[in-house]
Length: 129
Image 1: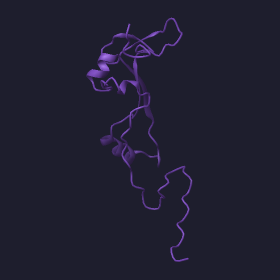
Image 2: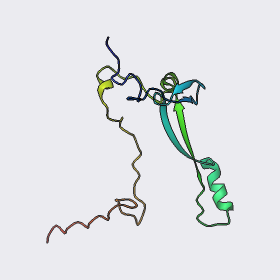
Image 3: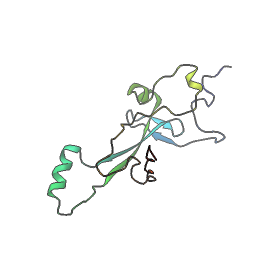
Image 4: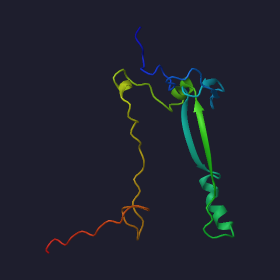
């Protein structure tokens, strides 16, 4: 019989049974290996109130803690909310993760283009020398 996916939509591989988790959107119980997983890191307060809290804080340079949430979605809820997309038959075979669209930030004044923690860039050699 033909199969649509080589993993049958699961990530089980030899385990007979996998515990179930609840979908964040629908509350449906789905196997943990079949669920669409997303890890969300977010500030405790929204951006509009963040500046007010910083100004009223008595501690200079205080970094507010973040919320770390692991969310599980069922397949139908993830497709409906466009967390994942339906792929064509040829693209289903590709195992590489989709390309991430991250904004490219310009370096601040006094910072090098390498970014924090990166190796410092060597100065360019003079052209006439």
